Length: 105
Image (cartoon, rainbow, N blue to C red):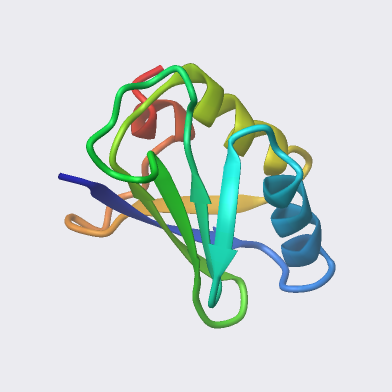
């Protein structure tokens, strides 16, 4: 089972490129295909090939799909979003959530 969240960045460029470059160079990045970025914590046992995916949508919008939580995944996203204004929404209830609550920190 996975949980989905919508991430809105306050600006499109260059913030979007900076965010994606930080994701690509992180230690948990395992691959990218057609605007979908897969992340995996090597210390977690998983039944899926990834623990989180970042799916690029239109403009400054992303879907973050989380199938497993860990502090390293949390810190990867926290550092990738550092210095950026963003809003994170739960897809199911359309309420604002914190990065900490997404990763159970």
